[in-house]
Every structure is written in structure tokens, then in C-alpha cells.
Figure (cartoon, helix red, strand yellow):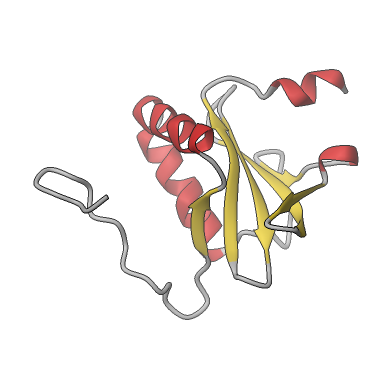
Length: 121
């Protein structure tokens, strides 16, 4: 779909040297991103900048860390990747796969509520 009047301008591709692409793995994560952006615009923007510039934090924090156990990895397009989380709000999260071969963060979950997959832990 071509952008038109009033649409948001996406950053040009390819990413500047040292920056990662940030893409949605599916339509549900894109919709969740929009909801999260409406609820916490500034924090969602900061998360996007983090994924672009420092997706694999050298020092993990409670708000930005690699997921553990069965959630530590995910597969996208046949490639197994590390899965990371950024806590955007108290309940809002972004999960992404770190695709080092393509230098791309694939957003697998974005939402205003805490992901249910972690409730089983």
C-alpha cells in the first residue's frame, strides 16, 4: 500500500550504518504496536530507538532483557533467533527476535497488557 496524505512517514531504507531494521513478524504485532503507541507514545518511541541502535543490550535491565527458558528463542523464516523483551509500561511489552543475519528485529508481540505466555512461569 502506498502512503498518502496524512500517513506517517517511515524512515528510509536501508538503515544507517550500525542501525537495525525493525519490522513486524505478523499483523497482530503491528496492531498491538499501534495500541501501545497510542497509550505510551514516548516510551514506545524509545523502545523503537533501542531496537534500532542497541537491540542486544550489553547490560540487561529489568526493562530490557532476553527472555528465558522456552521463550529465549523463536523462529522466523526458518531462522532461530534470540528473543528479547522491552517493558514499555507496567504491563505493556514488546517482544522481538534478533535476526543477526538480516540485522533485523522482528516484533513478535506488542501490547498494552502483560503477555500471557509468561504467566505460566
